[in-house]
Amino acid sequence: MNFPDLLGDTSTDLTALQLALRAAVVFCFAVGLFRLLPRKSLANTSVIDVVLTVLIGSSLSRTLTGNAPMWPVMVGCLTLAGLWVAMGWLAIHNDLVSRIVKGRPLEVIRDGNVDEAVLRRAQMGRRDLEQKLRGQGFARVQDVPRAYIERNGSVSVVSKE
Image (cartoon, rainbow, N blue to C red; front, side):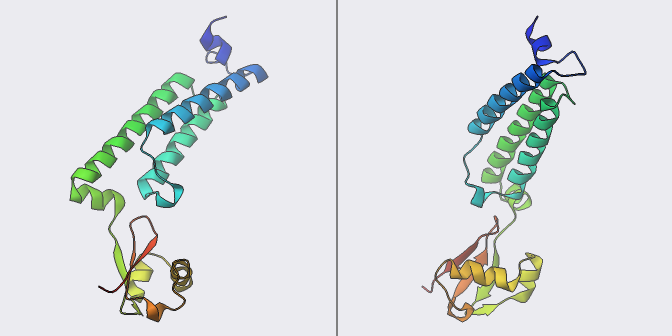
């Protein structure tokens, strides 16, 4: 029995052993793939990070269950990972690409006044904003000199100069 047969690449019905082996191969592949990609904490993910993580996860789940052939899916995932790295590189080196891919920060508070239009555009509620400010030690919005909704959705407070 060769390796593709062992993984069930040539059959439509997978045995428990084939599914277990596929799970091990897909797991090792996914861990290796994500270790190759740039490190980011989950709190600092951008839209492109989420989209590509979902695409890669969805693709790998199809090969895990036998709904798609293993090796072509892995090549597709490597292609997605390459695009991810390329877009990150382009975003670092080109302001227009950076704005398109990652967005731009939005000034939401100036001199203690909340810009409600910015909140709506960012689809953030006032209570969510207040929660994020409390997490940074500000009990009242009026005490915040300037704050921005960052490209990753976090809120940064800039103290007075």
